[in-house]
Every structure is written in C-alpha cells, then in structure tokens.
Length: 137
Image (cartoon, rainbow, N blue to C red):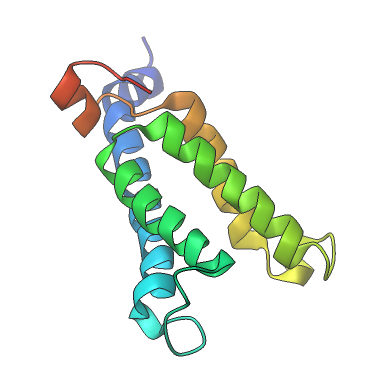
C-alpha cells in the first residue's frame, strides 16, 4: 500500500467529521443571522418568523445543528439541499443564470455539499450512531 492510500484511509473519517461539522456550523450561522439578527442580521435585524425567510431561517438553524451533531443527517441534508435549490431559482436565477453574476455561488456550493452529505450520511462519528448504534435516516 502506498503512502497516499495509507494516509487517506487512516484520516478520511476524521476529515469527513471536520467537513460535516464546519458545514453544519456555517449553515447554523446563516439561520441564526436570519432568525435572531446575529452577525449583523438580515438588513440589520431579524426576519419575521412566519415568512419565507423565517422558514428558511428555521431550516438553516435546525438543519445546521443536526448536521453538525450528525443526527438524521441524510434526511436533514436532503431538506437543506432542496431549500438551496428553491433559494437559487427564486432569488438568484431571475437575475442571471450564472452564479457569479447573480450572487448565488454560496447557494450552489451549499447545494452540492448537501448532496454529498445526503450520499455519505453521518460518517463514522455522529450523535445518531452514539445514541442508536446505527444510522436511522
């Protein structure tokens, strides 16, 4: 076995854990910004909870925490990927199809990220596996 294969096999579970935690944390920050007005808020404050942005904030906050902790990860990442798809076509696509021109780069990257998380699930380290000894969703 070559050095690269040994290195990749040995650390891939840890690398995926770091990836999943950072994605979950980043997504949580987006939700907290909308719901609680943290990090400068949206337009200087929070959004109305019973609005489309409020729903997005709820999905981002709860989804971010769930992905970070590794609980119901496949289900949650499917929902968040769908949210990103809807956000892209409702908000960004009408301005231009190109994500670089319409401000949708982050949305496209999150969409691709959530697709990958949907495929790979929790990984080796997760709260779900710790609690139930298996991945439920």
